[in-house]
Image (cartoon, rainbow, N blue to C red; front, side):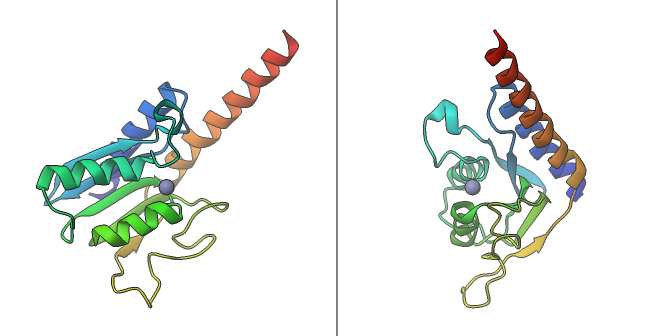
Length: 156
Ligand SMILES: [Zn+2]
């Protein structure tokens, strides 16, 4: 089941890819139903807060009309940053399911581990490595393409 929902998060990441945004996607699941979806839209939204998770959480909260989602799970293609890990704690997610890890910015075990910080009043069950390769591949493909495009531009 985790792989199924991670595929849905990957669909969101592909939407970002097509818009030339860093391809990261997220879905929020409640009782088996997707109640929020999001993909990274930093450039399009001209907003540093428009991360995939924030958009998906926003939509999910709106869907159920509650500030907390204690029964819900969130699936994300890349380990959350500090802001998004914080938002996940505020939302009180039951479970957080991660695809690839982010060594430079990840706050679910890479740089630090906010999701499993014992001093917080809420700790979601955290699962890592679901479709890890697919989630990492779409990012490396994106950055590879970006570098190639830059090279082409330089040579014109
Ligand atoms: Zn984030």
